Image (cartoon, rainbow, N blue to C red; front, top):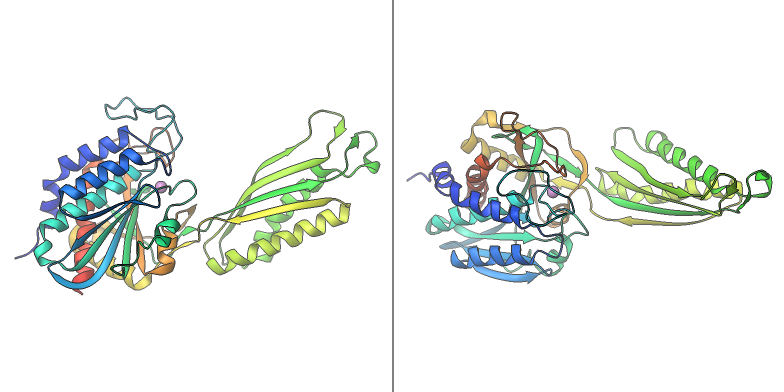
Length: 393
Ligand code: NI
């Protein structure tokens, strides 16, 4: 008998909508996802899964064992909300001032719960295991890495991983798959330039950290255009430049902060050295000192080509060819799903969320952002089918 994936998704759509709305009403920030974590653990324990709580503080991992032994695939959903005031008159809007699920993680968790429900229904036909990973703190300092360090990809050993993100540019009802890079690496730059303060009328006696700062800022853009292969993608944006207090006093110090992003994990490791060279040269020229701190946050998220092709074929069977779009435009935003993909092959799907009629036109992290609840059952079924197909392979 054929498995009725879409019917199974449709059956639980209302229940999933309730679950999603509950998450949406009670948003929690990274590593504070206590209530969220309790809700997930309760639902999956009731479902009869092996549930582990408190992984990387607030993470939850649940295992569904098939009837027959086999491979293990993981499906991941992120749990955290954003420090943002929601603007909405919907009955399920955030009940917590200044916190909101504005990045769709409420939907991501619901898809994974939905997939667990559907796969549980077909447990007797499952060969191998499915691990459901609910991960904290994607938006802040990253929960993926600590979850991996706590062994989430072991016992049983995970051989492939599936994840996704609601995507505002992709039409609701469709998904988008990308081979190779899908999201950028992220890094932070903190630079202090120490000059010599003094009277603004006697600049020759001072060392002007503002002038030096602006020269560094401009040369960092030259780095992207002249020192990095133009076929590679990189962004260096200085987003904060602080110096000085008044009109006529040249300050002692300037502080610059910014972000560094690429789609290439080797280039990512080469950029800091290039940046430091520029800073060293410019500050040297003017006789200033500097202190520089570059922190690597998330690697670039690189989809595995084989697994992506496999997932795409499976998705086409379920949604129809026309609803599975081949994307070719990665995003320069970051995503800590990257850490899993450094360890096991997998893919990070884009779940279409654009629907003008429903007013779903807002970007991620926008106070008006909302998700298309019509897709909850369908995407759950999609996750479940890809997992089952992979295990059957
Ligand atoms: Ni997100």
